[in-house]
Length: 126
Image (cartoon, rainbow, N blue to C red; front, side):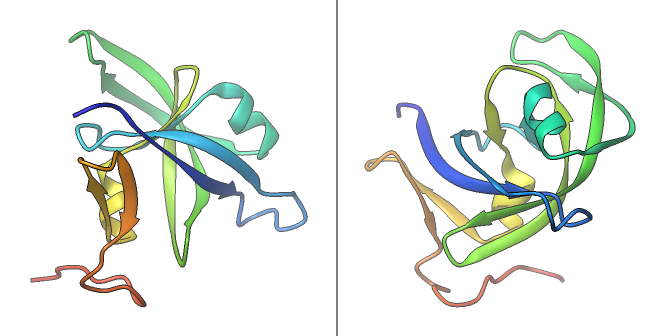
C-alpha cells in the first residue's frame, strides 16, 4: 500500500472568529493522534495544554507539546481532539479517524466515510 493523503479542515472551536484552515494530511492508521506542525498551531491560536511523550517512527521518544482543542472536519463528519505539535506536515491518526467513523481504501489510496454508515458516524461503546 502506498501513502494516503487527504484534505481536511482544521479549526479552533474556542476562537470561532478565526478562519479554518484547509490542509492536506498524511493518513496514518499506525499513529494514535493528530499531529500538526508548529505553524498550524500558531495560525489556529492553539494553547499548549501539556507535554506528552511520543514514540517516533524511528523508535526514539520525544517530549512534544500537546495543544487543543481542534475541530477536524472531513466531508460530513467532524470531531474535537487535541494534537501533538511535531513534524512538517499534518498527520491524521487513528483516534480522530475512529471518532469520525472513517475508513482507508488501500486500493484507491483514499480516505472515506464508512459506507456502512454514510450519514451518521457510528462507534462502539460496549
